[in-house]
Length: 444
Image: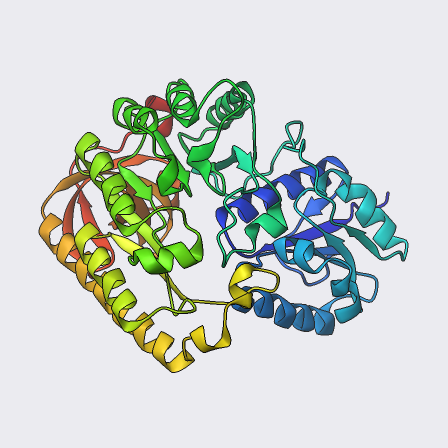
């Protein structure tokens, strides 16, 4: 009896890529492949890639070199995702041992493409399919506690620094009924938290329903206890959407709200389509409607033309909003984006950008530490997600996305605990259980 071929998928980048890897793994499993946890000895190795920054692509290039040294002579190596979409067949020329290049809309043909590569062909599939949502795919989820659920693909905003419209194509949304069906399946699989995914997820619209309708519908599915979403755009938080967030008990009190800059001048050059004042007004409207709302964000420093005064405005906006945390980056030019065509004299020297990044990180960490110290002694609900780095602790999240470490064992993963916050490192909490653990099957 012939053994079934094995596949190893390594994922880079955002949660949408994690979800796409789950779709690819499900597709290949249905075609007879067996997933393995290591590339060593695998028949097929797929790197599902990110292209949003040059550093992400360089990591993949380096990883491809490592794999070449260790793989079997007949192993098929493929690059999928956003980097594959951006570079297309050029990747086949740059890395001769790569035989597959597949963009985010090409996974339906994945088994056939892999089979062609196993027969010695070199395959590329990077066409956009504006109707593709993979509704008939059965994802093989990596996480057994929460489920990533794409509700939207592509983006129409075209910010001047961003490669996503090039790699993901124009925006299109799934139908509400299809999303609800997937959420019901998630509950049947034993999970009670979902994360709705989209490039600008709150602009979701299926022709009849807006994002507020979607939040109410998925939040009402029996067995769902927590609803999250990422990443929204400040312009799409309508009154209807904010009301749905406030009035749906399962929607968590946390929003990741990308700001990118606190300077209206820089935001205009980024083509973010809101001002500093517009962003702060969005924050105000949400916090008035949702008491205890925590906010995280994305911030870019060193964007072409960013002055010292622009950066100081970013720091002041970070302090005014009092973000719980932030993903912070130096500007990374991406081939083909309008930002690369800005005048050379607008380029911010790397040393200046690095110094600004250091100051920004210190500011964010200081705010987070101050917030966390004020919360010591509070009692909160925590969903236990995974083992912590220390073997005798589990890592969980509060509804407002704080990380809490509590004593426990792997059998408790997926359960909810009521804990008292007893300590903090400034970034994470330690907690002590104050109530008996509720098995996941007993909550709804």
